[in-house]
Length: 192
Image (tube, rainbow, N blue to C red):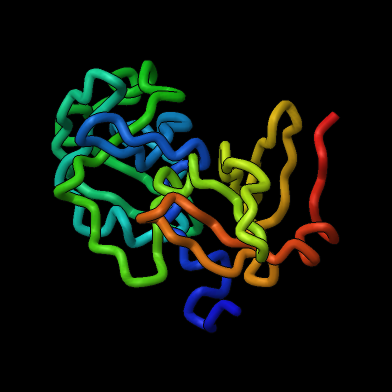
């Protein structure tokens, strides 16, 4: 059984539901739109921890990883207002819509024992109580209230909520997520 520390979606540090790590960078935000007239942007935090951006002094923009010095970041309820030193007008940031901001690995806070990056869970095998592989995790979708696991076995895709009653143990080292088959049968959704 999961201990209490592993409850509530196993204290994910949720880096984007697609959870991509590119070389030495990890996606941390998606820019939604300009905010105000002074070159600020509004971004969706791709982590379930608003404090992940608390002490960040620079971010990287897009797949080219252009380094941008941060003037300030105000985060709350999954969103951030970010002001970069380089941009001072709304016109300077209008073209940034829907781009991603990255942090480098040196900026990522240390994880506690029962925390994992989503991109470490993607690709793990789902294993039942009989040590049988019943699928592979393809994605973790974030629906605010619950994280949803998307998995595949052969040509069949299925999903289920990441609940402590379903997930018994996560073993990143061995790329395995152990599940309660009986509980999984109650909550699984099979794609057509």
